[in-house]
Image (cartoon, rainbow, N blue to C red; front, side):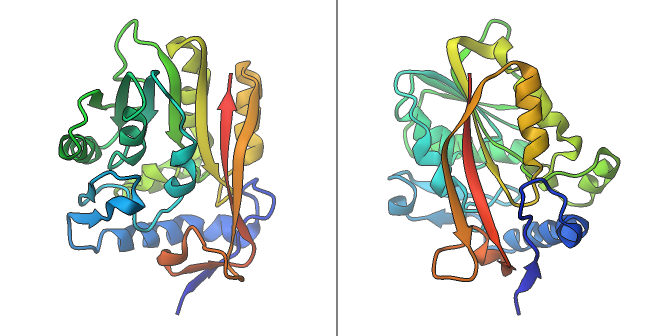
Length: 260
């Protein structure tokens, strides 16, 4: 029997039952993603011709499917690119096929190792994989044409930060108080070239879009939504979280924001 959650209808993270239960639901979901036989391999026709495998303790490509919508939006021909939260490397490698150079950063060393292995399997040499928290591993003077992050969209009050210690990978889904997102946006200009941009993917699922857009506004960036897509549970359209065993009473919307 599937586990049912009430989806947030206004993308502000304040639907009662949804807000109270979401951390435990995603924790349950993340647990399920780690019960695979690792490493597991994806078919190149599903991953833009790339040879991809996912290791244990790395964010799942099989269960979290937002990357399938967001990744093709990454047009970075001949650019210097930074990706925050690279995971197994699908977006970084996709961009490396076009870009001059890609720096791929993740908080988890297992993810950085996974991205490194996938780069080697695809003979991609213009990628530099680093362990870091947002911009902590960026070298002095490094600047980029595009900085991208498929954000940890889940919002929790800052007082709930301790909950993240309860399960590995929780920081891939939740950002208490949106502190990391604030750092990503407010410090972004420091690492952008002239006329550079930030691309940020975000899901309506347990997010606080009102706060996210307020952070953008206060940072001095101008933003626009360059693409969005809704997934519905109660019709034949695919659901981003179908494989989680979680059904939604309403819809889940993915958005790609561009900040300049």
